[in-house]
Amino acid sequence: MNLANASQTATHPHTGNLNFILVCVFIDMLGIGLAVPVLPILVGEFVVGRDLQAHWFGILTTVFGLMQFICMPILGAVSDKVGRRPVLLFSMIGMCLNFLATALAPNLAALFIGRVIGGISSASMSVASAYASDISTPENRAKSFGKVGAAFGLGFIFGPMLGGLLGSINLHLPFYVAAALSAANVAYGYFFVPESLPLAKRASFSLAKANPINALSKLFKRSDIGPLIFAFALVTFGQMMLHTTWVLYTHFRFHWTPRDNGIALFCVGLSSALVQAVFLGTLMKKFGEVRLSLLGLASGAIILTLYGLATQGWMMYVLILCNMLSFAAGPALQGILSKATSAHEQGALMGSLQSLTSLGLVIMPLIGAAILGEISHLPANDWRIGTTFFVSAAMQTIALTIAWHYFKTRSSRSLI
Image 1 (cartoon, rainbow, N blue to C red):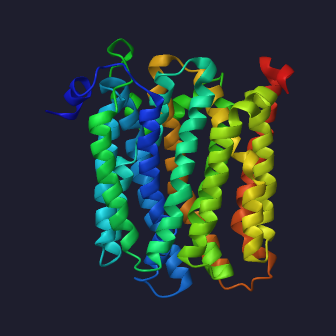
Image 2: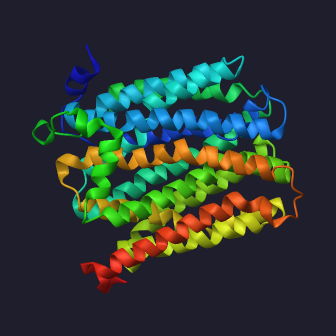
C-alpha cells in the first residue's frame, strides 16, 4: 500500500484534528532541537580554526537551505494534490535518514549527505501549517498557527537541552536519539494522523506552481499582500542570520558549551511556547493581528540590537526572556496572509512562505559565516563582535517600517 492510499484507508478521511498534527510537530522539532547545539561544534571536529569552522558550518547550512528552497514548494503543491498526510510521512522518513547519516558521519562529506537528505524532506512546518489551515475557520487560523508554533517551541524547550546534555557525552549521540524519535514519529503519523484536506478542495499539480522561483514571484506579484510578504521575508532573513550564527557566536565570545547553548535555547523554546500557546489568544483580543504584528516586530528589533551589545553570557538569558512579545509577530502575520488566500491555495501559500525561510538559509548562513569569521578573533569588549545581531536588527527595522506603511494605507488603518 502506498502512502497516498494509506492516507485514505488508515483513518476516515477529512477528520483532521489539530491535536494530531501538534504531536507530529512536537516530535519532529524535538529531534531537530537535539541537533541544534551540537552540529556547529561537531563541524569543528573535522576542521582546524574558528574561521574554517564558521565557514564550513555556513556551507552545510546553505546546502540544507538550498535543497529545502528547491523542494519545499514542490512538496507544498503535492500536498494540495494528494493531501497533507502522505507528504508529512515522507518528511518524517527523510528526517530520520538525515539524522542517521549525521550520527554515522566520519567526515564533512557525510555531513553533506545528511544535509541534502534533510533539506529535501523538510516539509513538516509548511505542511503542518496548511493542515492547521484546512481544519480552521478564517477567524481562528492565527490561533491555530500559534498552537503549531507552540508545538514547535515545546520541541525546542526539551530538544536543545537534551541535545546539549547528550552532546557533552558524545557529539554523535544526539543524532542517534533524534533518528529514533523521527522513526517513532513515522509510526505515530501512519497510525494516528488523519487526512485534513477533502478531495473536493484538492488542486491539480503543475510544474509552474512547484517551481520555487515562480512560487516566490507569484507571492511578490500579489498587489494585495506583496509588501507584507516582503516584510515577512526581511524578518525571516534576519532570523536566519540569528539562528545560524547563535551557537558559534556564543561559543566564540562566551566560551559556551553545547550544554550552555542547550539551556539558552530551552529558554527560547519556553518563551515561544508560553506566548503562542498561553498568551496569544489574549494578545489577539487586546491588540488585533495588525497591532500585535507591529509590536512584535518592534520588540524583536530592539532585543536583537541589545544581543549584539551584551558583554557577558548571563545578559543573553535576560534578553531572551525580555523578547517574548516578538514570538507573537509570526502567527499574527501568517493569519493576515492566510485570510487573504483562498482555501485551495493554502498549501501552496505555506510552502512558498517556507521557501522564503529556505532562501534565507541559502543566503544568510554564508553572510553570517563570513561576518562571524571576521569577528571571531576580536576581544569580547569590542562592539563590532555583535555585527551579526546588528545586521538582523536592521533588517527587522526595515520590515517594521514596510509593514507599518502597508497597514496604514490599507483598510486596516483604523486598527493601528
